[in-house]
Length: 104
Image 1 (tube, rainbow, N blue to C red):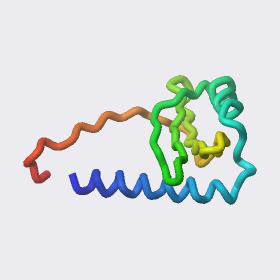
Image 2: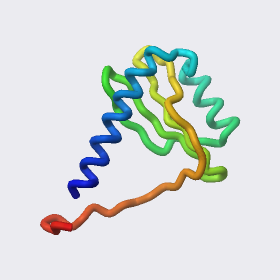
Image 3: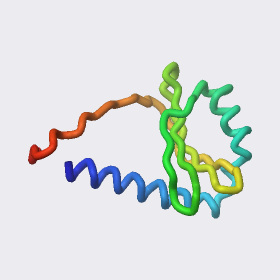
């Protein structure tokens, strides 16, 4: 349980850091509608996850069940979406939480 919480906290910290860095790197950014259209049309990626980062930014994970490609984006409050990371071999996992009271 502690490992899961640490991993989740680390992941959220990385996303928040990425959102901050995006403001300094606008060359990977475009209006949200254009980014979504490109991800869907070119890469067949659809939204698989979403979260709120610092300063009102929205982090989203897009992936294709057909090709396994994936992309992480952050949309800033002004509507600009920036690419954070992308790759291949995306898999959807469902991890069960440990039973409460179990020390494992």
